[in-house]
Amino acid sequence: MIGKTSVELGVIVQHAAQAEVAEQLRQQGRIRNVELQVRRKDGVLLDGVFSGEVIQSQGKHYFLTVIVDLTERKRAERALKEKNEEIDRYFSLSLRVLAGGVAHEFNNLLGGILAYAEFADLDVPSDSPARDSLAEIRSAAERAAVLTRQLQAYAGRAPFVLERLSLSATIEQMKPLLMASVPKTRRLVFDLDPELLLIKADAQQIRQVIANLVINASETLGNRASADGIAGTIQLRTWSQPCDARYFECQGITEPPLDGTYVVLEIGDDGPGMTDDTRAQIFDPFFSTKLGGRGLGLAAVHGIVEGHRGGISVDSAVGAGTRFRVHLPPAEVSMIPSSRGSLL
Ligand SMILES: Nc1ncnc2c1ncn2[C@@H]1O[C@H](COP(=O)(O)OP(=O)(O)OP(=O)(O)O)[C@@H](O)[C@H]1O
Ligand SMILES: [Mg+2]
Image (cartoon, rainbow, N blue to C red; front, side):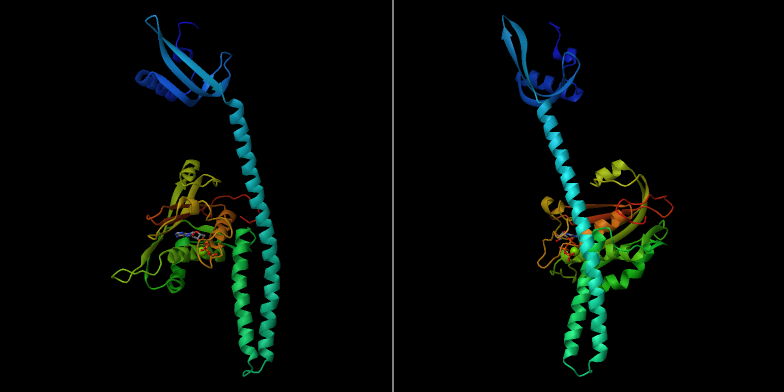
């Protein structure tokens, strides 16, 4: 091996790193602590940290290198990361099971509370002060039922009634409701593909997804309206497109659904956007940056989209607004039952 360069011997495995090392040595005569893969004499690949120096002796140039073997450390780091991911998955699953179970029990109890409040209302004279109290009980129980539905959706335990529906038509039907749910200072812009492929979905849950995303967008826009009386724009777009693992990876979807054509719903706003830290936590249940926020809206959206064998992505940066994309498989795709118990 004497007389051969490390390049000729193929010690450094990655071509790009090899070129980089050579270039730095040419320019600076030394290199320090570059992490790369090297090949041992017996051909075994190692993760190493590489330092080297060009030295001169008797008019000749020599290259002195030291490679510290990091293979074990890297392996331990990888094992730790995998273990942490496994714990995260287990924790998330346990939380879903717990939330789903509690939500189910609460739903039954709330059904009883609402029903008995109605019966009592019938028995109480119309001028009784107890009527106001009964109205308060009903209203609190209805608010609790909304929360329970969000929890059930997060846990993937919301009841499914599947039908073939057009996402564009669903949004068209919801237009009056959406407009009434957000202040007049929000401009709602619709760009809906009328030829959109149909999806097989639970209409109630899909409406919950749309409403949660639009309400979040509206809440982020704040109250400061410009001269034209508009505090910001919320845009709803639909289209169909082929999506593969690479596309889903670009969209930051870590557990990508199957490759194929998807129906896409995009809901964007020109609000203040999110920090990286916030963006990383938005789908966690009970994460909220709002005063009085419950942090259940996006957890429910995530559970619903997953239950429909879809994927959701978010693109947001401080000062650059926020854009959510929901990808749902069209009705024609054959679907496998979900391990979380959804019917798709
Ligand atoms: N369009 C958006 N722009 C900026 N931040 C957003 C947007 N949508 C969601 N977020 C962030 O994600 C967090 C979680 O949203 P999520 O809908 O789950 O809960 P919430 O809106 O705070 O409470 P609620 O349970 O009432 O919906 C929000 O508190 C906010 O920080
Ligand atoms: Mg919300």
